[in-house]
Length: 164
Image (cartoon, rainbow, N blue to C red; front, side):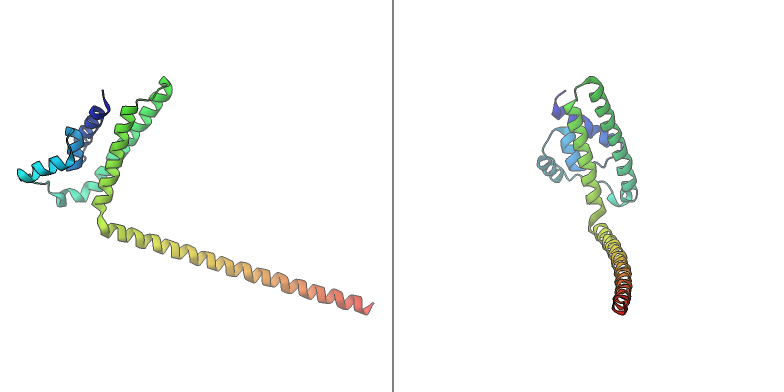
């Protein structure tokens, strides 16, 4: 089985297992260019699936699909180790599918989710920096106390020598 056939079969499986029927997946599954499929869809007025209805469970479906693909990748890796040779076409197909799932997930999350994630990341960074600042202050106070102690001990020693 050639690489193109493996990719097409992998895309068909992804569709069967719940991946959304996007034009890029359909193009890979049908061995046609995405641009050509887009032109056909426009000419024939293909109706896109209701994304609002499926958006609610899309994240769950993508997670399940990713888990399955990772399992298949692990299985292919184990088989390759046992046989001493890896099935490149199969690994390439799985890799392409995982990239597609990741791309779909990024697209589905949209800019609002990206902003929320960035805000969360910024808040976590601010909290970490606050903890670092607090620790620096603790260390500085501790060091200042040690220096002051040494100065007192040093002055006491000087007085003791001067009194001798």
